[in-house]
Amino acid sequence: MIAVMLVEDQAMVRGALAALLEIEDDLDVVAQAADGREALQRVGRGGIDVVVTDIEMPAMNGLELSAAIRREHPGVKVVVLTTFARAGYFRRAMEGGAAGYLLKDAPATALADAIRRIHAGQRVVDPELAAEAWAEPDPLTHRERQVLRLVERGRPTAEIAHELSLSEGTVRNYLSSAITKLDASGRSDAAAKARSRGWL
Image (cartoon, rainbow, N blue to C red; front, side, top):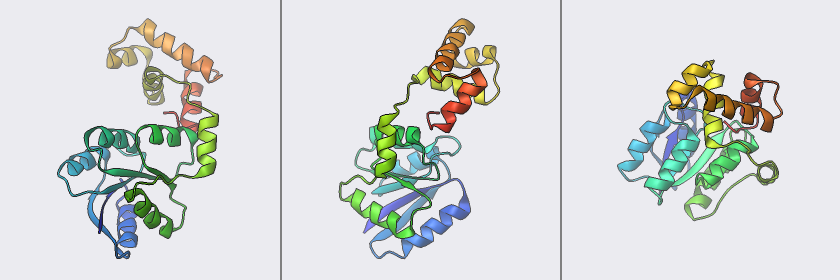
């Protein structure tokens, strides 16, 4: 029996996934969580073989969760299940240690099959998304991503500098670099372009 944990912030979606997986004789949904932080704590208590996680969640997103599980619990496999067919998200998921990346519009049987294959040590990814991800690598640095995420939230330069413990000049330099890399018209456009490509 494969012990599965579902991580999804929408309770209705989480419940539907659990019901679908429980139909399978060899899969057992032993835990559920509404965000990455809660999920990581539950994984730490043991008894989980495969984690199926969404990406966009409060507290800790699915990409951060996947990377944390690889660091702290390398025996646990992670499948990212998302609505986002974005090359940037896919690449970050793979680099962060996810063993699979599936889209929510795939047939229900595809998820059960992916869990089995990943539990057996395989990787399960969409080949077209994989090709796109490696054709257009993420040009942003970690700091540039941090700054653009705060721009998305409407934070002015002074607040961004305070939150990241940087000088305002350094923040402006990161913004200028990101705007140039993304061929954007300004800071908000840069954040929007980075988000649309899955780089934030």
